[in-house]
Amino acid sequence: MVNDQVDRFFEVLADPTRRQVVQLLGEGPQRAGQLAAATSTSSPAMSRHLRILLSAGVVTDERVAEDARVRVFRLRQEPVVAVQAWLDQVQAHWQERLGAFKRHVEKTGETS
Image (cartoon, rainbow, N blue to C red; front, side, top):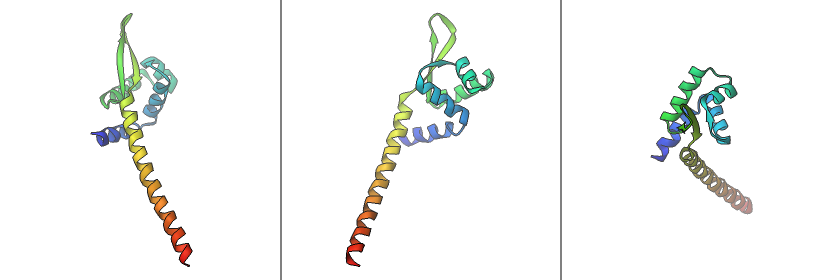
């Protein structure tokens, strides 16, 4: 499940506009129009990007009580946490491997 979530997260972030949207939403919730303006993207194109991000579970949306036509988009924490956990595992693996290499080099250096 977690690997699927990580895969999907990276898949949707392959697009630079969606990466920018995720970065903007990391600063706080925004309406589609604000995101379109900030990314210099047309409203229809932003709508497509947001649909992809919604279907991947990267963002969520909610209607504004004062005006049901207005939707506010927020970055979901779960996919970001899943990616961070995966990156932590990769980093731990490489730290262990580099530590083993260092120990090997130090050991072989002593016997030379």
